[in-house]
Length: 214
Image (cartoon, rainbow, N blue to C red; front, side, top):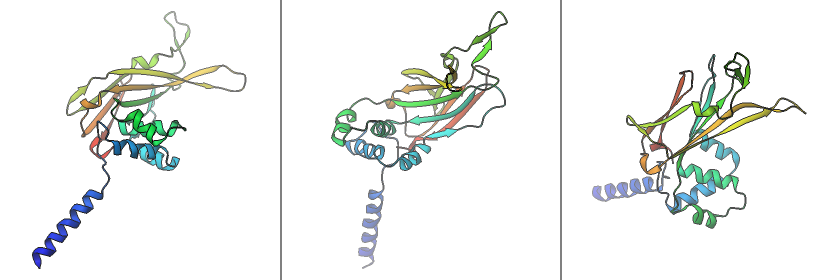
């Protein structure tokens, strides 16, 4: 009788763990993972916001210099969810065809905001005033580190961010987004640290545990 009760307990315990959703970093994505990511992307915005909040780290504004406001890790799973949210006509079978078995990079997004001390205007070499280059983001260094090793990126690009001061006014450079891509096969399901170093030497770092993210 005692043995039967013990066996029943083990069966229930195994069933409990089997019912738990996978929450670890996964690559390549399985068909089930693509499907789950698709339906997450099609879920209500508040659910998506809650999901992506776990992948995003925000920072306080520095006293001087440029403002690295956030770092976001976009795993292949999160990328599929992101694309599903943006592509309104994408259906579940289309998502399987588009993403399953296809290479999907792990991405790191960094947002930089200009500040009064690091603005869209700057001193020129002759002592005058010059406009800051929209490619200023190239002066920032982004590193992804796991277990003491820096993982080399496979691609990096930036996109300047502009804003209008008012009706009839011209656009003004206010910041930029940096998107760095990595080979997901080189990234482990373990804690990873992203370090962003600004041209003035200031740096911020964010650690995310990929063993707890999909």
